[in-house]
Amino acid sequence: LNCAAEDIVLEAGLAASPDGNAIRWADLATEHRHADGTYANTRRTYACGTHAAHVAVDPTTGHVDILDYVAVGDVGRIVNPMTLKGQIVGAIVQGLGGTFLEHLVYDETGQLLTGSLADYALPTAADFPNIRVFDMDEYPSPNNPLGAKGAGEGGIVPVAAVIASAIASAIGIQPKSLPLSPPRVWELMKSSGVTETKFAERAPLVDGGH
Amino acid sequence: MSASQSHASRILGCFAAKDSSSMTFVWLACCTPLTVITAADIGSPLPTIPLRLAPLIDLVPYEQPVIASGKVRYVGEPVAVVIAESSATAEDALDLIELDIEALPPCVDTTTAASNRSLLFEEAATNLALTYTAVLGDADAAFAAATADDGLVRRERLATQRHTATTMETRGLAAHYSRRGEAEAGAPHRRCLAFELCGRGHRPGGGAGRLAGRQRHPLGGPGN
Image (cartoon, rainbow over all chains, first blue to last red; front, side, top):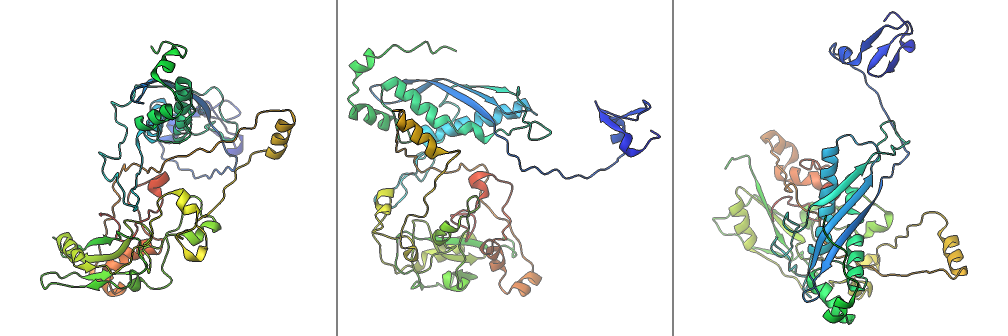
């Protein structure tokens, strides 16, 4: 480019000199040039988002059906939307497993009773509906050049609280301990005097259609 | 079966015990295990399993030893490791190990644990390992203002059940040793185990969260 290295402007995929000459980065790359650099940053980033769940509780069994689950998150700049969605859906399903199914149960002598995957249930594809995930990158993080805030494990954070609150809305009692297995939800209703009649008197659920 | 392979099997504690040092070993002629490792073979002080994510000083007295010594604290705690030329021999040898231990009162819930009637680590004097307080901003002022304005201050006691990481990859360790290595280390199988004991183990694959942490069963590594 016939100019000093510090005069070169790197922009829009081009390395340009002050007098207008330019080389594409892609062409530079073919010349097997190497560069090393270190980037360090102590400023943390925080993604944010919100989840909502629509559940149906069976007053006779305590079984909870998830009719709909929607997650919206602002993760900063999105690099790969497909893998991002996979991370978040996976995290939510892990959260649903911890909320409804997974429980290491011990007997009074300390012997593990849930020693197989038949007893320690993990979420499967048939257990929950399609999780609706909407990711936004409207607000890139100012704390790093990529604008990324991080995504992945964040999807698991609100799941138990969202589900417990949705169940509270349905039955009128706030669950305070997990997992929300059918016997526990049933016990919760029974101990709080929620009967099928009272259940029916509650405000009708809004339409659960997607 | 390659001559360079050794198989490790562990016998797991089934009782809380006051003494796991008085184990009796009986061998049949057909069983030729390379060695049996107990806490006495590892030496003192017995290494403990460090915490990865929150290695707070308060938690050090509660770090689990890599193998039971004097006391078995939970169902599944390893008390002996058998190294043999085949896993079948190792398992047969395990059957020949007799434990002479006394049962302690079980302590399987937080209420019983909090009573300190049965201490997990006597030297710690309490089962309460840590009180964790998380505060962002001036919480005291916020609570004071809320109370002054007749605002709602809500207290809740919330409980999460014990559950665990889901295995995406097996917890395994493939290692080999050479005759040269054996000469250097004295006992080749202990090289593999020593990696973990000394915190220099190479865990297979990657990992995040629970998978990346050291588990409570480092000694003997994979298998049951």
